[in-house]
Image 1: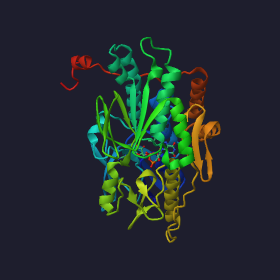
Image 2 (image 1 turned 60 degrees about the horizontal axis):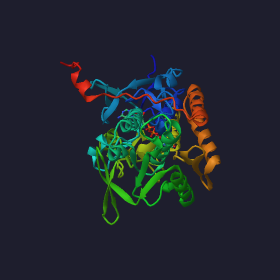
Image 3 (image 1 turned 90 degrees about the horizontal axis):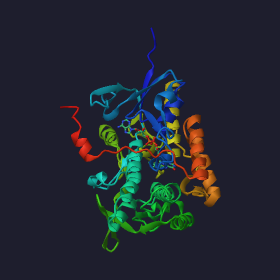
Length: 438
Ligand SMILES: Cc1cc2nc3c(=O)[nH]c(=O)nc-3n(C[C@H](O)[C@H](O)[C@H](O)COP(=O)(O)OP(=O)(O)OC[C@H]3O[C@@H](n4cnc5c(N)ncnc54)[C@H](O)[C@@H]3O)c2cc1C
């Protein structure tokens, strides 16, 4: 009789899920990777896609391509909705909303975070976050579209509103976006407009903390602040963005004073929270979650009292580990190793996850990045070169690495960004189009 293999379901094909699936590939198990999308996305370069430097294809790779060589791994598209622990199935939906189920013996949850508006979901319409390729393309549409709008507006006040870009959150993503918008305005499109001077674009970065890039420590944070200032990015620190609408935002300081900033483009990088499937997992298993909705896990990354379910990456909470790609990748590898050992040596005790800190970095502008690796703190050109090397090394696919490196060299040498296509609709045109469902 043919022996049936244990079934492993990996929910999420990002950093953690992909590493787990690849590590399990040679083992005597059947693996299914379930993702709501079809590609593995390199989120650390999303902001370059959002500002026209890289294409969506350069920062992502089809899951099927990555997994095609592994015969015991299957990729399926669907959004995990619920977990039926009694029956051992993940309930998922297809893009057309129909539902299907995946049975598992071992489950790895690696679904990542989404943008959090801190109880104000109504801000989302006016201030897109940056977590997905769709977000990046939406930001590109808004940023490049704002310059186009400004070109034909004569009223100086209104024109200024279109040339003001407000970004909430002075963490790496906010800082990187702010730097890129100024670079785009000054270096790339500076000479392409006739009525406006894109370099007049006002980029304002808001944060509740009293420093930019605070987790990088006071020295690197001060250096980053200095570079941002030189680049022309304004920072408003110690303020919370308390309201956002189509015409701008309101910032409230610690004394409760409110200031309104008129800006037709508002981008939100202030917070993240676990995607909804994580609360379904917590409900089904009785696991505890933290303020951001992350599941508190055992030292070996499994869910308490559920030794066949692991939670890895951004949605796992253990010893205050940060939500960075390295934690996710090493977590995915660890969960896969635990499953491999369980299959071959079921009597062995679980092993705790040990994280090896490989550092963290943020890009500021051409020639400048900050990088923190234990006691080593780098900034300026050296930090920038290291930042570039790390990102190229971790980008999936040789073709993407070559294309990204080429795009960077072209941007540096010729001040060109090749990925400036945007798709827009005119309300009147959209309304006159025959309805597909009529
Ligand atoms: C703009 C940006 C810049 C960043 N820069 C850096 C950086 O410079 N360095 C660094 O170390 N880290 C950086 N990070 C953080 C890093 O990207 C994350 O820590 C990492 O992606 C976490 O990996 P993960 O596997 O937990 O989740 P993800 O990589 O987010 O993968 C989650 C996957 O799950 C899928 N998914 C979500 N919900 C469902 C569902 N219900 N059903 C099925 N599939 C689902 C998603 O489509 C996605 O493919 C950045 C993040 C962002 C957004």
